[in-house]
Image 1: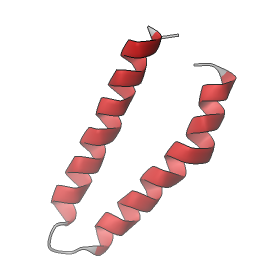
Image 2: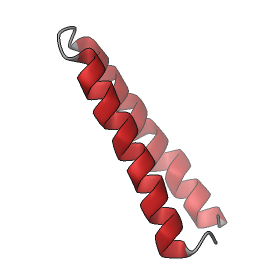
Image 3: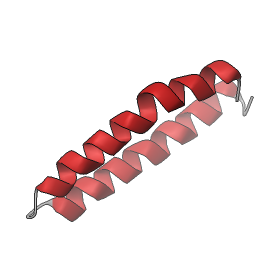
Image 4: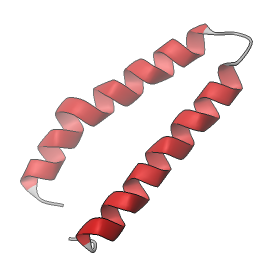
Length: 56
């Protein structure tokens, strides 16, 4: 990953995922469903990013 990608992840993605995790953790009834969806979304985004950039 290039420096620009790492900066993007550090400034935008990590805080967004942390915030979404916190928001979903507040809902006691659907906590696990929300966290599963969040984890799947992050995994799919990483796979898509890797496929589009060719692992560069």
